[in-house]
Length: 70
View 1 (cartoon, rainbow, N blue to C red):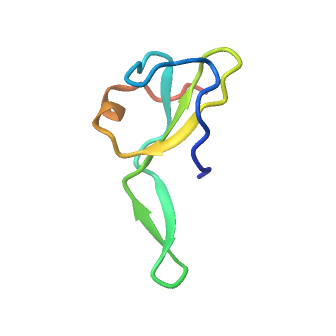
View 2: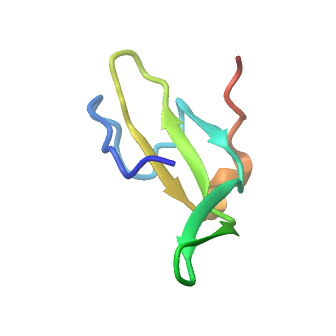
């Protein structure tokens, strides 16, 4: 998964409207000498027009967000 990219749309912290979960609890990270290990981080995207916001989090608000539609 990619690194944190802040929102460019002016969304305020705590405003979860227009956020979707791209990957729910599906992060894979390199730990323990380069071996891949599963972690509970989810990848969240802001879907407001012209925004490229994207980050990984284990925050509780992710449970209330919808999954990204294809």
